[in-house]
Length: 110
Image 1: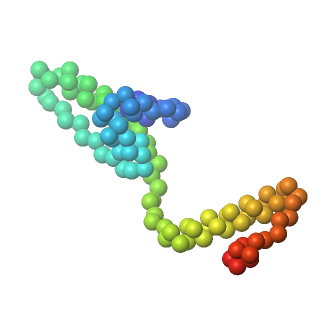
Image 2: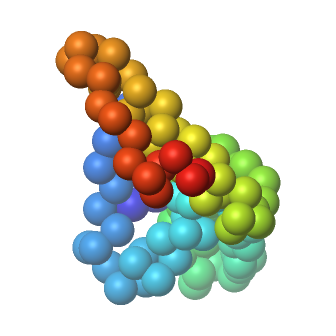
Image 3: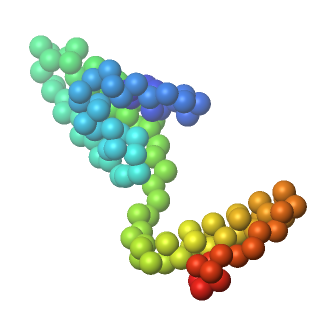
């Protein structure tokens, strides 16, 4: 998963290969800022594990997430925008097909 996330042209990230990556899915490749701490040991008996940890940390450092601010929107404003979009699309469809439809009483009241 880490290698796939660090490759920009990769379209599929295999999160389901591991329970850990499924749990960390939003933290690893989502809209967030993630920190990683690599714990290394200077003991000779842990040298292989330390090298593997450092290599893993290098791969993690290649992951770049594009963060955007999550803003809460007023539901009434969103509904208003969506209704306006529906009306615009209806008008566009009527213009494209060449069929002008009469407005219903309900539509006239809006």
